Image 1 (cartoon, rainbow, N blue to C red):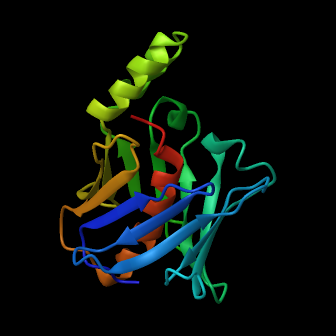
Image 2: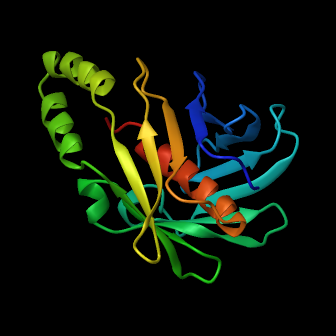
Image 3: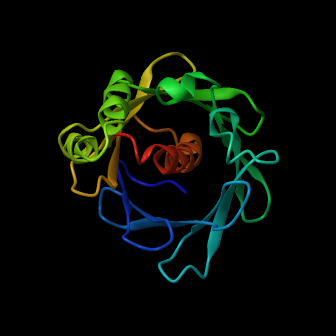
Length: 204
């Protein structure tokens, strides 16, 4: 998996969560489906629209890991079982704003992901807590204010930026490169950021 950036990650209107990933030329990179009725979060990644060719799976590690989202580690594996890496939530920090590490197959941190404006989520939560009227205001807030996330590499340099695009249904993200992408990074980053938007799609 070595797509051309920027990538567009777009949720389809469906009873089940389905995410479509396309590259800069509009070519399909992946179709992502969340498994229903599972104690642990589990995601399957396919190369084709018909979902006949599965390329990867992503699964939260540990019993009830999907419920304890702020602690979960999500392992990314290829269809042959080999490890790509993992997305690790950084404990209680994730309750305030997105805070994750992307780990390589050896378990070492390769990238860090941070919400650029975590206070926006706090404001939205306060607004949404007001019955009825708060829900309407929060819906407008979702449309007008959209979060961004910066991905920094192990050297502390910004490498990617994830932007949530303005939409009535708040379901489209764009991943931009801030420096040249190394071929060995592309697979881990693409799949790790798929998990990021699955977790963060309700924010902002």
